[in-house]
Length: 195
View (cartoon, rainbow, N blue to C red):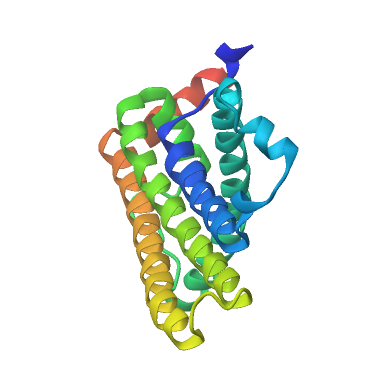
C-alpha cells in the first residue's frame, strides 16, 4: 500500500511547507504547547515521536491543501485584474499539452511542473501570511498598523510572483509543445487511431 502513495517535491512546496507554517503560527498564536492535557503529553512522549512527526506532516499537508484552494482563488483575482496569459504557438488545451509532454518528454514535464509548484507555493504562502496576520490581530499579538505594514506588502509580492510563475508555466508549456513538435505527434496519433 505504501508503494502507491506518491509524494513529490510539488506536494512538499505547494502544500506541506505552507501548511506547516500555518500550523506553527496557530500553535504560537493560541499557545497550544502550554495546554495541560494528558493526550498531548502522551503524544509528545519519546516513544511516540514517529507518530507525532507523521501527524504533523499529515496535518501540514491537509491544511496546505486547503490553503491551496484559497490561494487559487486569490490568484484568479489577480488574473482578473492583470489579464490571462494566452499561449502563442499552440491552441491545444493546457491539459492536452500536459498529457503530451508527460508522455513524450518526461524531463521537460518535470522542469515545467516546477513553475507550477512555485506558483502554488507563492499563492499558498500569501494565504498563510494573511491567516497569520488575522490570528495575530485576533489575539492582539501585534499592533494593527505594524501587522498591516508587514503583511500586506509581502502578500502582494507573493501573489504577483505567483502570477509570474503561472505565466512562465504557460509560456514554457507552449514552447515545449512547439519545439518538440508534440502537436504534430498528437495529430498523427489521432489519425492512426481513426484508421
